Length: 171
Image 1 (cartoon, rainbow, N blue to C red):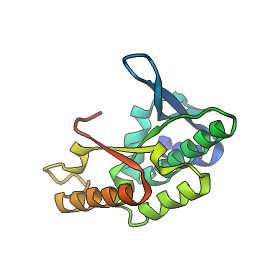
Image 2 (cartoon, one colour; image 1 turned 45 degrees about the vertical axis):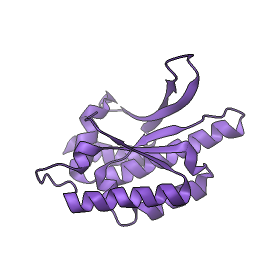
Image 3 (tube, rainbow, N blue to C red; image 1 turned 90 degrees about the vertical axis):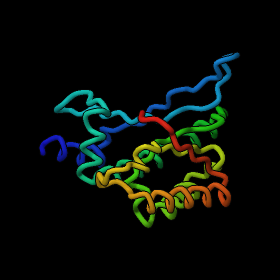
């Protein structure tokens, strides 16, 4: 319970940061994009690994605010770099299924795109297919809801140019 309380505080107190890990072409080493990675530097706990706090955030529901913050901060950082003359071709952001379960997800995404000015084609949103299409109910989306999410993602892709990647393996 203490770490959950500290995580909620971390969202408001600047203890979280987004690091962009470069993605390079295997042949030639050309920069093709970056992946957003969240980091938490807690005054009480020190550097807290994502494997320790992401599951807790999922369980407690804090993942909604956390995921939205990561998405917004990532887009802001990319646009700040663009303004300074550095063009990052694309950035990947991992989403939680819990974010996609929220009816306001598309509106939130559209608001972040408008607020930051990032071109939708530069944003790649990633989820893990096995989480979406789990055979056993685990609190994640059921099969019908998963298909609706996939349809929604295809629609956003067509309308806004955003890229969605459904990973076919657990990460």
